[in-house]
Length: 189
Image 1: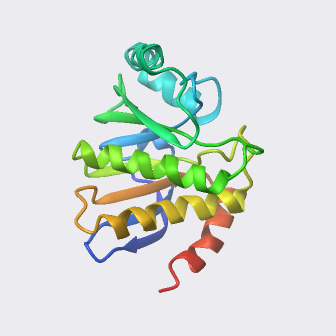
Image 2: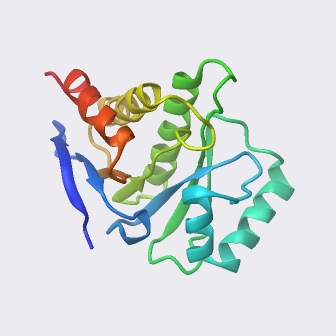
């Protein structure tokens, strides 16, 4: 299921950025991004749903990553095996929690790292969910600006990117409404 397209932007290199309403587990992409915490402990929200669908292979890989690297700081991302998911890999973006300070910059950084990791692996399509907007409580306007800015900056810095399609996968609700408002500002050109 491809979801319902809400907004779509094509960049000068032919890459696309699409906002869709869908369940991220059904996104037709080569990799998905998980809204992760620093210990890659997938206890709630989209992270729990992804972990349940991915299964024990992904969970074991996450434990190994933490054993080797320790806690992943907010603003960073790592790749794990996809386990039972029908994609090539899973990227865990660790967004900031409200109150850390500099939340928007850290959120942009986490997503840009996720996009760079996909590019390094030559993955052509990626979908990311709402990061930091749930239990991390970063306000919707901050999240929306960061999501759009991260994609815009990535494609500006990588006009020949092999990552041809980035999708922001959301559910209907207030965050989607704010993303639609911010879209007009971010892509006014």
